[in-house]
Image (tube, rainbow, N blue to C red; front, side):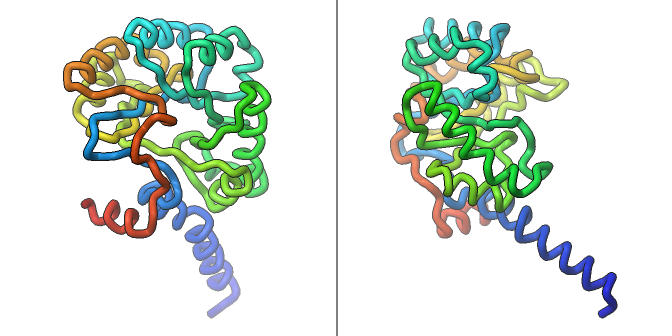
Length: 246
């Protein structure tokens, strides 16, 4: 094999280990991360990413308060420092506040050292802001590289994915399509991901009252992640079942 081909084969092998395996086993298969709770119960976990944002987070919080629902917010610490009044309200109203990222970048676009450090930095920042050591972290876009996986382990946090993605961030999303997507995808033990900031905040605040009404009508108990019964990191057996579609 000539040297250029060796170089290409080595590059492909490195990419498979660094991105391909984490994508397949962790992001798709759920290995070592939380993907759902007890499918035999009637709970669903409601989670929000990318905030807080003074334009949209208060609208989300108003709706949750009116419905008597608490949720989990995966925050960007820099935004929380810019808007401490929103962080105080999140905590005062009993919501779970967890780290999203130090820098909101897709894991595959980060240098390995930066991707490794990000979960730890975000976790320490959230702990400093809230006074509570986070147990969980959700990386931006739910994306993993090998460095992300190792960084979460080093930080002592468990990754969290979802079972319901309403695509509230899509350019063609509307409150009606977001509400319908949640209705279509939600099952007992599911984890719903929505956004209280960023592109998703264009549709989610308006969709949320209907989403909560639908869940209530179907007799789901809506809880933050900390209260989701049966939530545990996925095993290799779980990965096998997931990838086989069972």
